[in-house]
Length: 265
Ligand code: IPD
Image 1 (tube, rainbow, N blue to C red):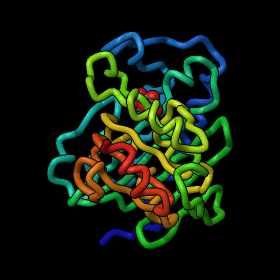
Image 2 (spheres, rainbow, N blue to C red):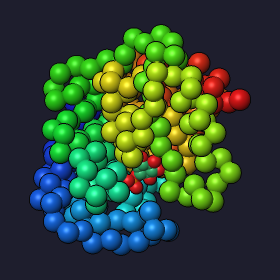
Image 3 (cartoon, protein in one colour):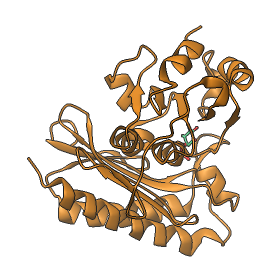
């Protein structure tokens, strides 16, 4: 077993260093490296932050695998005892537009694919969320807990839409329309990692999304579990589909089943 407190501290250092790199480039004109469509791109910030994180974490933990948004999975990731799931810049569209809702997300999963460490850092907001399995979760060093909202009609929920929504029948629009009427209100921040961290900190009562990736959610899901919340796939189970980001329901626990029912009609 690894020293989770030490690894968590290392992930915090890497996230802060990435945040510094992102902030240095934030108020400058951005480069757009397009990937699958006009809405799916990386900026120089994504690449700079990724380089900083990988250099630090590979030096500190050479035996861990890496799955990172811009460079993909390394050779060690398939068989390593522990694998980092890294989004150097979650919320790239916001970052490119000069909006402060973006974050670096660094999660560590064990060989079973379960998260054991999670750090989400939103440098423009000055918010560093951090947690480790069995050790709780914090925001800027202070313990956090999920909200106590008990009913859907009083819940403030957040969600997102895949970059591939133009190709998907299951594109979240029907669920958005339904839940907009059934909840206190909905938000779409454009950064899944930060949205999940804000559920852990009790700001949002729940988050759902389909078709995202392990690097968007591994850290945030750990934070919610450690802050007393519940995470599952659409069938209610903590499955591989959940931790890979293909199906996420993440809440304070109280509203979990009500949200799950609303999503499964
Ligand atoms: C995106 C954000 C967004 C979500 C997208 C993700 P990126 O991540 O998390 O909220 O709806 O599906 O791809 O590309 O900005 O790192």
